[in-house]
Length: 294
Image (cartoon, rainbow, N blue to C red):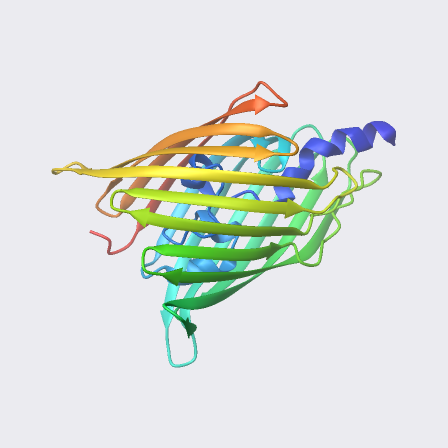
């Protein structure tokens, strides 16, 4: 049992606040206040409401470090956003699916349905929006056998004014248990606060996160920041260079990456290097398409 408990520690990150896609990975997952892509779909449900066009994205990730500390994830994901504008609902729905091998302990799967509002309430110089995610978290043991599936809930708020935004989210509100056989674990309740600011060709983002303790890990706090510079090339599309930094109680990392957008398609890549608590580099690659975005 003691050995199983030790093996479970690196697997917990798949149920924590891992942002979606390579674009977010290059920003050190500091996307709680970002509403321009699907990266925030798994960390702040309110952000998806700002999507004005249908968008789909596929990603592959190999992660050894996350905001919450060391991990060992080899997986993939699919996500989509569908805007809606009716007399009853105004915003967007989001779908996200992830499949991760949390080596050597378990295989983790999640499926999430998200709704985020758009221009829900006018407040001062800006607008306030809210979001809700219902998801299923499944885990099957690799070393010990067994399986489990539990429901989870995420809540989020997003306030936007001029070229700035602030986001607040509560991930895994009900703290679903992910015990498999003798290996005990739980998706940690996580509070995230983020801000973002666009200045000409630059975008600046920052996140502060607090995670409660679980059977596999202790409580952790992290501060992350990201920077992007974008420029257009004649007849060649839009190019972006990104960098990110995480300073956390369980790890410190530096991320870099880039993206290329042409017509409605985008290709993004990111690598992440540990500055403490590890030596293996992480990477992620994503391909997305936004319909009608010519």
